[in-house]
Length: 120
Length: 107
Image (cartoon, rainbow over all chains, first blue to last red; front, side):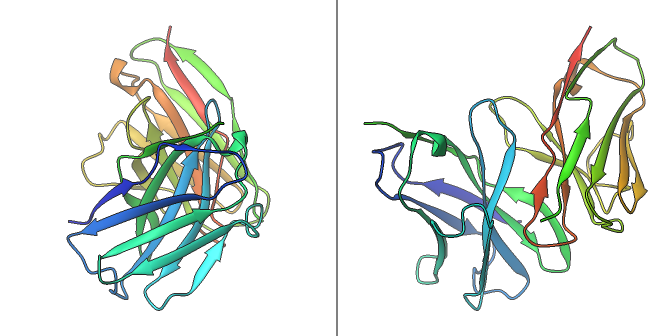
């Protein structure tokens, strides 16, 4: 069973970079069977997919955020990470990491989510 | 991008009622459509995948139908524990997109 857990600062200042990590257990992050995604929900808003990374390091980002998002792998820690640059108050959200089986395109495993507030 | 539009945005129904939520895709997505239930403070939960397939462990009162651009999530007999926001999500094309959500309440 794949388990995911987000970690990182709960408060980020405007214009800075938001950095979160997702620790994966139950499967190697180097497995070709999974895609690793970040999804967020801003207060009062719906779910927004931010992007994914595949075990070979290939990435795909939401075009609306593409210039600010970077997702990377750390195989030594069995983690993948999110960096979102130049944040503003509109980036305040609960951030989730999630997994997708490569042959089954759906989010069937999620982390618990972590609230990140952008404020000075 | 493929845009997903849900209707209604919210609904209120009585326990035992049949509830239907619609989801429309801006272009054809075959049956690459998933439904999630999201309760406040909880993690989104996959209910239906591939438009009509029930995820393991999900009560059988939930069902999905549709293909192409028009999809439906049905709760056959609404229960108090079904109070949540429901989202459709397309996985036909990357970037993956969600509908704006439908909030379901008990009357």
